[in-house]
Length: 300
Image (cartoon, rainbow, N blue to C red):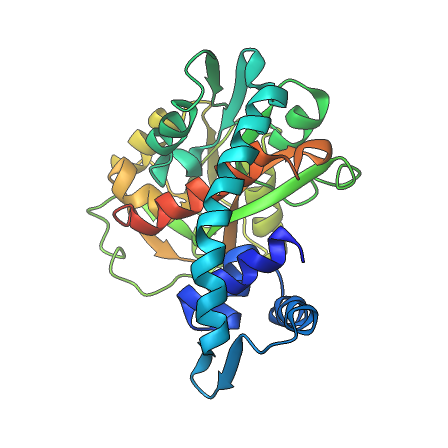
């Protein structure tokens, strides 16, 4: 019997479904089911009835969960105590905080999480041109919360781990007064002959825009490159140009957002070094941020 097997059983009981429980742990449903079956075989009893609606506890399963829940709470407390002894919070902690993390309201949840480590100072860095996976790998940052651009993790995948937080559509951002703001979607070719607002030369934002325009045969009339997101969005607000960005930028920066067609979804990740991906700290922070996103008012 392992702690993870016990967690899988208790989470399945709460969700009423092995599929939903597997999603919570970011594993496949067959993998979770196999672990539950292995535990049932070890215990010599059936914990769940599989039904068309999902999974229901048997009487043995209900008794198991009643005993397991307090044991899991005690284990979590023990893990947290051990994690404090070996965590990087024994020093100043450096966090890369991407623009999507900001627009999705994650700053306060991060600070609330760090309140659990009151003896530690931390620094937050936000840079439109930063390559977050590379910065984490090089030790410039301890963790980062941001998106990953195409090609950024090339050669780093063995050293950098990504924990998905959310996915949101990439949009064409425009003035809230633009007559096209009510459109259901626009193709990248809409930007042909338009003024485009972008990040600085060489930034992931600028490279992605260039790649999309090239693939779509799009030639903007001019590109305004800005190294400050507030200035960039001010230009968009004032009808000085269009930009590419997530739907969450609309509410946060006061612009309009029309989804690209075909749809292009961008993932926001918690980024850490591979050596830290199984640490209590990373697992708890990931869970905390996912739970926070579930209850935050929709920014997008």
